[in-house]
Image (tube, rainbow over all chains, first blue to last red; front, side, top):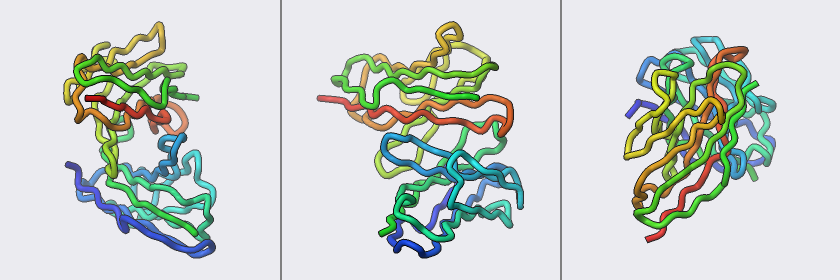
Length: 112
Length: 115
């Protein structure tokens, strides 16, 4: 299995607080992605990265920011969490953009 | 723009029966196509990938999928369902362009296997 670790695995927080999710890989893959998974919507891309300090927006990027200061770490930040951001968040990596993605086990985030 | 549609949010089969999960895509250029499986409380795992080498693609766990350009389809099949196949299945399409090759996922199909 690809070495991908998401932390934390579960988090409960309150509306208006900042939240940061971490994705760590040991595969040295160039591409990293953040998705959210909601019932009836499948997986929706939030942001992705194609190298250190190189990121781009996905289809549901509003309210989220990302940073990648090292190849192995990709951080997702909710600056001021809202209840609509309650979801399961998945990190994925791929060696190149046209290669299959490998997924972490997810972070279940609840915003009350 | 690319898109993918999975017909049926739930598919129910008996153990030993044929599994057929439907995926149709929209793309103006030849796509890459993927099927992933997700077991409860886990991330997605790749089942198989189409990259134009062969229209019939064999994957893990006895699954296969056939690319049909004329029907813009990439349906997933397995001849005989096992209880362990119960999971969520996602089809994804990837094409070159802006955001080149970043895949788009379908909404998923939940496979239910009855004893």
